[in-house]
Image 1 (tube, rainbow, N blue to C red):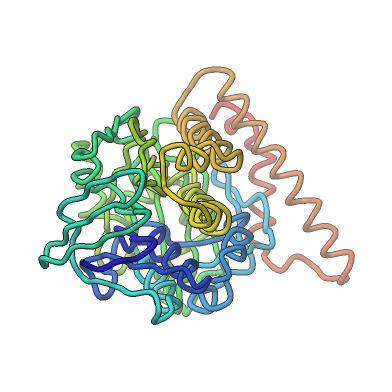
Image 2 (image 1 turned 45 degrees about the vertical axis):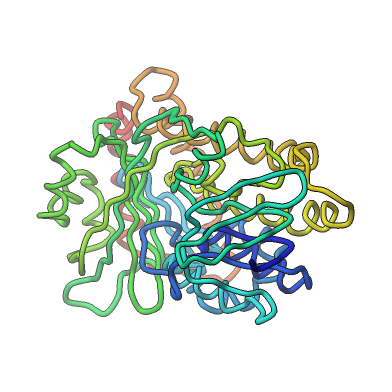
Length: 408
């Protein structure tokens, strides 16, 4: 029997971040995961916005961000036209690189066991984990960060419920220009023109020397469109996004197209002594909404900076202690926002009702006005002329075709 204060089951982003934070804080911690190095997986591939602030609160930002690629500027396209060029703090990184970079920050004092947790039992005092290699772990607290693996949770009476099956589908792949060294844009976000595309958006951004594409769609996994995209991705992209060719020029898709569906799930029966769930183990989010990493960092930052130190300072690990984390205002607000954004983005992308059409049109007008004003200020400040004549022609085309766009 090995003894520790905290045992973390699952070494993805949530579990590895928790292990690094607790280990650096001097808390006795064991991370349990079967993979010595986290394998490639289609999940989070960029960090930005409030995720960077949350990452800094973990104390792991400096080393983690060194492994990423900052785009610096993103072009935003709506209805087939570039409407804005904005400063951007997006940091591109493959998920396995992200996780392994965080793992490298786990101090030696925090042990790592490369095995699977095959059984678990809990009580208000100590918890027991039996591993696939025959070892047994005794811990005051178990953090379940094992994502979609529900086996252990079911043995504890913790149930997962799907509230929106195949809510969205993510396609991940590399793109490269043909006949030239680079694309004109540092990064590009392309919002669709019509709802029949069943598309949220296309995001293209740099990771190292490659340009990575994440295409977010709303389709069933049995939809033949997905297999058609795998067979002819360039043709499928041009058909779905008629204005894309004008921005990208000739391009090709490099390497395989990875496809990942995402269900929206919630958990019941989770308030139990000695066990706490974080990240996808507690609830899932829609990748198109971009809130998954925000949820992970919110969970782990609050848990490791606030609740675990307080729990370990007193005897026992009863359910009342555990409930404090689930009821934390920051966590509940993040959960509610994530779920609401998932449903709102899907309706905004696929609903053809008048109110949703009005919202899409309003967003286009606002982004166009913001982008035009930003561009004018930049030109006045530097006394320069437009650096991209093709974009200027795009604006003229838009003015001449406003009636067609309004019907989108």
